[in-house]
Length: 260
View 1: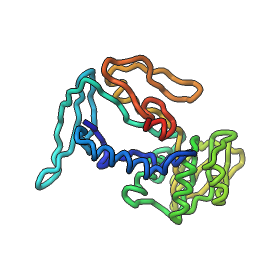
View 2: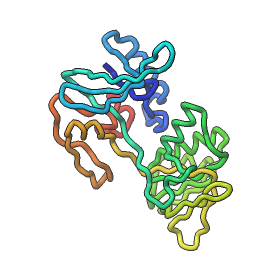
View 3: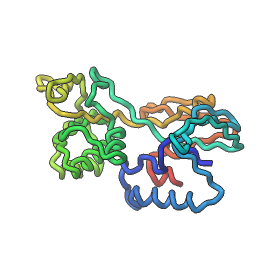
View 4: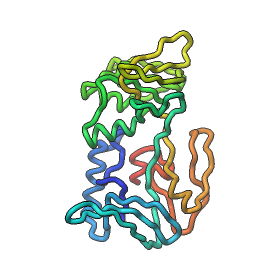
């Protein structure tokens, strides 16, 4: 049984791009979908979210398609072996105004644009501590959105996405932190820790504070975790009988690593 919280299989790999030797994200996901569909012994439950777990048992909330309207239901699934592959969560940077309307995480912006065709405003400012926000900036630029600047809190960030973004004409400001965001009549005023710098004016602020393996179910199952100082994230530790972690929930950083 494959329990999938979203309406379709696929995850968020499209945001993370392709490393050398990998298929495009869409190709990888298509292959996996076809393999699952061709395997009669796999039952897929979409729109179904696990919210309680222990050795041998998972409780899920699902949406069943009734004849007149969707209908919620709670199911208990017994299983000798449970794999938690819940992916990673994007961290929200901490600054004054980080939850104002117009401030959105890079993953949320990507999901709204790719799944629903929604993008608020014609310009955006990106503030990140992760390379993947640069890929989102390039995808948005290809769609006609103006993204003139990327503020990166790392002093010397380097990746091929960063190199590509320079070719797009995006100005990069490394080693800078967002200190506050205020609402204006036309959008947002974004202040940084650079002395005497005027606030940046933008319609939308896209932020990314890095990624954290989603250990929610692991902790519900009473799994332990430790803080990794080098990678600045909480990681699972120890073992639980009959339950394991896989993919980015287990700490893998590449799509190939997650699939294998």
